[in-house]
Length: 43
Length: 352
Image 1 (tube, each protein chain N blue to C red):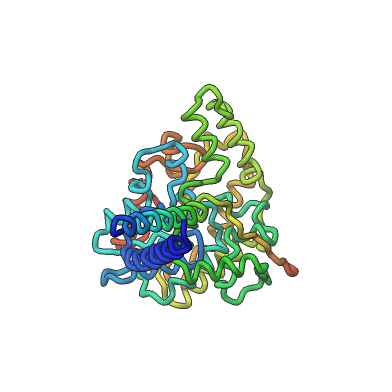
Image 2 (image 1 turned 60 degrees about the horizontal axis):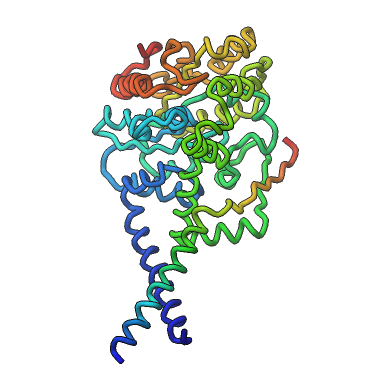
């Protein structure tokens, strides 16, 4: 019973960590989404 | 898997986000932290963090505004080991140990960027502002609307100016701005991205390709110089500049503001590799423009506090990797010259 619970916790921990790393990797290696839109008014 | 596992996984993930946020919040107070991201100023928020982190000490502050020459991009392109430790600001910090040097140099900076960057430093008690000017900055390429500033996010920091540039970020950018404000993880992931893919993704992929498959390199070494000359020809084959040159106007606005506020500054015109640019520059316009820029910018009121050095012809060809980027040895020499200028009561014309 206790083993089962630890198994579950371990799986949940790994799953959470994997998701966290996925998001961080997306942040770092994803394309820069910001545009450089610029309004130019009469120089 | 049961629902309970997913619930716990989400909880773990959230805890990791919160943990990362607070860890970064603690780390960003330390100036050494910015070495991890090679001092990449990827956003306004990172800029604010860098200034705050450095301003904590009680030593007098030197603020360095600069472009790729100051940032050390030439050393990076030539894969110099520990290149960030051999930049001009790094050497200056070693030579002036009783000062705190804040390096806010960015690849591709222009005088309009400097004008905005300086506004951030005004809240500090800055002993000296040091900035470099480069021939590229005054070329026609950078005198038209969107090209006159290298980072659009700096526009909102510009003091009243005659340029009438307005930045209206689209919704996507506003969302990203919000994310940067609330999430330190996102803020520093961006800085990390800029650092990993410096100077551009394309360049970085080429470099990786060259390492993995040398035979498949997209650019032969002998083509590099030719390509670079093609790229920089518009910077050097320019006509004579006039008083409407936006970069010159921006530099004048900045220097006038600093003079008004009693802010000591040192401006130096970056050494140029005359042999490299020989084939591509407009010789007459080059000499004229250097003189014109100096005449427009050099202060006649208090030359002791407001110094302008034209160091364009200071170093011989071996000092350079290309048209203007200096080798570590000459970065150190330049830092020595600047350190002497800071220490001495007198400006000097020659840094040899």
